[in-house]
Image 1 (tube, helix red, strand yellow):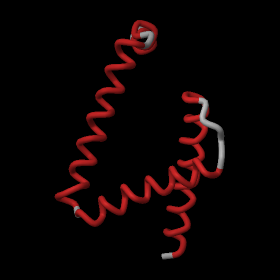
Image 2 (spheres, rainbow, N blue to C red):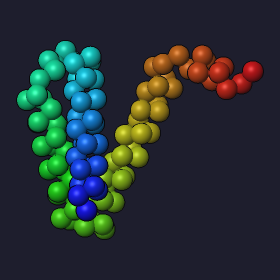
Image 3 (spheres, rainbow, N blue to C red):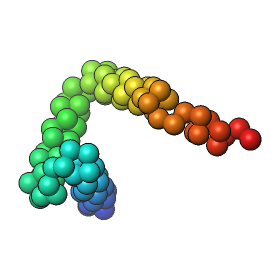
Image 4 (cartoon, one colour):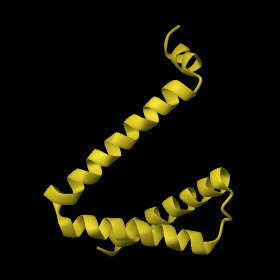
Length: 92
């Protein structure tokens, strides 16, 4: 039980560090422990609400939101990125 708990905590900490680094890179938000604590608190709040609402309620909604964001990211990369370069890597 403790191994699982500490594994989750470690993953959450690494994820917060990565998100913090990307916030610095994109929005020039300084890399501070305060930012990491706010990120971890926000992620924990969303996870707690999701668990409390149950599988049929919130987990399904979060899954659908996740798929929508993934589709939006695909469209952004397809239309705003170097599409021919990316497609050319697969077809030779």
